Amino acid sequence: MLGLTYINRDSKARLAARLGPKSIVYVGGLGIIVHELSHLLVAIIFGHHINGFRLLITDVENSGGALGYVNHSWNKKNYYQFMGNALIGTAPIFGCTFVLLLLTRLLVPGIYQWGLQQMAGMLGLPFSTNISGGPTNWLLVIVWDVLSINITIGGFDLSNADLKSTVPSFVALFVITGLFLFLFVLFGQAAVIHHYLFIVLSWFILVMVISLIWSLLVNMLVRI
Image 1 (cartoon, rainbow, N blue to C red):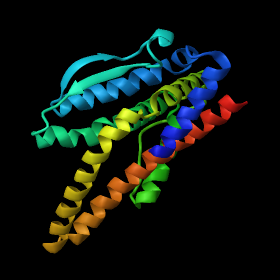
Image 2: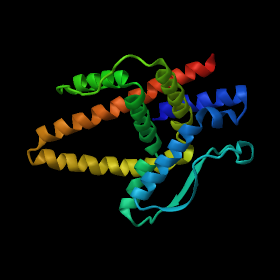
Image 3: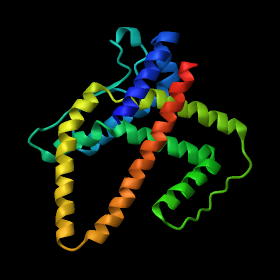
Image 4: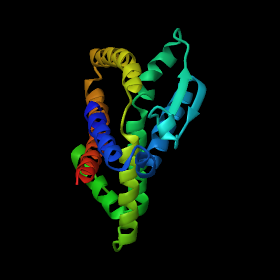
């Protein structure tokens, strides 16, 4: 996640230096909206109080560089709300990846089907789908490329505040998850844990790989 943040911050900085700060709004506006909406939805799920939010700030020059925000507060004595910070801070990574996958499914089903085949092979699962790739529609491919670049530039950059709020909650979540896994193994459920842990880790790795590939491609593009 830190690697994704660094790459996409570099992309934004290069884009702003070349075309001006407001260019990020035009080139990454959809990604910014998805980024902030991901924060907002997960904060609501974990019962945080929403003090205010802006999904997209177009007046970048007078906003101190802020492109959007979700201002939320929580009861520090409520452990559920505290644990939510681990997912609220990192929600844009998963939210943007979900939107990219959805766009791929709708606009370029052939590529989506290929991705499912690769994932099924990685998990060792049988693969079957009723998705028809059909002939390539190059107009949809171009639309898919433009939207994907927009989401990548605007969405995958985690702010310092996101990272700061995530660390303590993520550590606590890691410890609790490790304790539960230990108890399951202790009671003879090692095979079950191994199966589901493998699936979860495979999905997580797949999400990170997709995000990293798009981020690197966009970063190479803005360097041209």
